[in-house]
Length: 145
Image (cartoon, rainbow, N blue to C red; front, top):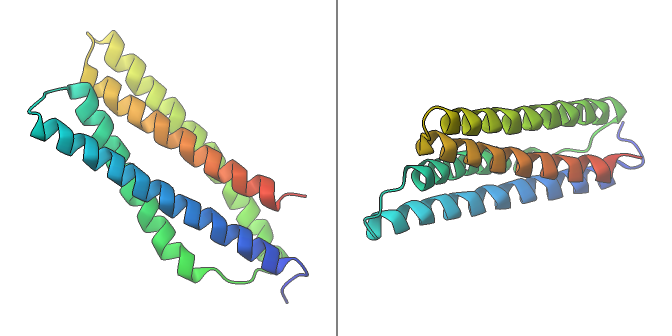
């Protein structure tokens, strides 16, 4: 049986997935726009190229997740809401891990002879990890008592 606040949770979950979908779409647009601009101008920049690829690829994954999950939102009972809460905390931990991996890539690329492709990829992973952490924390703040 759904709890008294199941409709509020359902609404918050819908908003979260819409935000994820919008972030994914914006990332795809930004990444592919940057790649297109670099090809049109015939400019070569390993840093920008790898940054744009990371932004666009992560954006595609985010958009796909949002698009698949959005129509599947259902009213949650207390047990399902608890699982969602725990899943969100797990995701926040993973998001922090993405940021740390991105920082590691960035630092490694810089220390190994200024390999700017690796630096750009690391920057892209950091940006995506921070954005996903922010989205997840906004959702958890909205549903926490």
